[in-house]
Image (cartoon, rainbow, N blue to C red; front, side):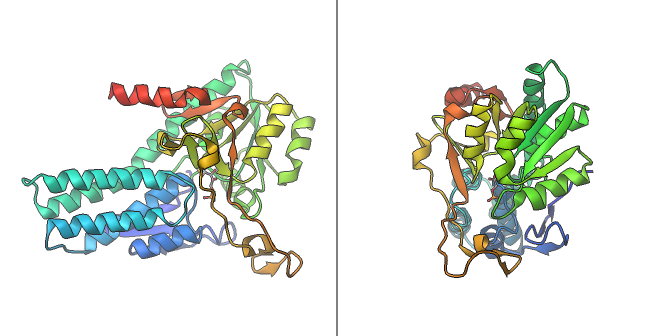
Length: 357
Ligand SMILES: CSC[C@@H](O)[C@@H](O)C(=O)COP(=O)(O)O
């Protein structure tokens, strides 16, 4: 059984508070978009797909309980709440993508005079609810495509891989993206070992990925972020697989801080570097990684650990949550639910799939 971090039935949403993991597993209820926004901001829920799903479900819960007297009132409410949810964290694009789709849907429904107000509301709620299963289905495809691609280049022998941050069941509706690929390898007895980085300063690797790997009984070793080069020099690593928060038109990719240095180290050691993400992480509106808005997190996330000071008092900090890996360093490819693509062709590929629909 994979971990479940989002519990939902109509009118009720609970998330596993990721600030308390791995010591305490506590679900907290989210009753409305204010609480959804705050849970995203505080990183009680994190990971690009999970942020989008929880944000939209917090709106679904609020909509379930609220009555509207006019179509205009419902439309303005939905637009306002979606814009608000997108503002919680700026780098991951999935929530902006979900918000844009939600706004398009409500606009279309409102314009159709044959549909009753209550049915419009219900359609939107169902649209948000569908995100849960859709994300799991997408992740399973990513897992299969990624594992097959990696194994094809390794004579189908068990592989050693490295990953960064947390991209598993805790970052998605379930299964995971990069961790979904690793999970697929494990399920097919093709995972020799996975090395996961601590991922300072929030320690998504040490706290969350390690927790998932232990839970799934995978052969896994935790390394500090500054051990990655030594690990690649000492072990035959077949692939580095990471997630993404935003892939832009030219294939440049924003992901958890430390991803860029891993990609450089992988290049030096001739280790294929893969990014695994759903199409909803692709942002064609931004041409190059230079234009991605990188979130800066508060200093105390670097200077304290569980409230205990670990840095000299008075030092100032630079604490970007993400960095940008240039497309040319994504040497293995971008693993999506449609297949594995060269980052330079990602825009053309997605255009093709859009036209085929
Ligand atoms: C499937 S999750 C992909 C990314 O969102 C993940 O790698 C990441 O960078 C998460 O950052 P976080 O700051 O924990 O939300």
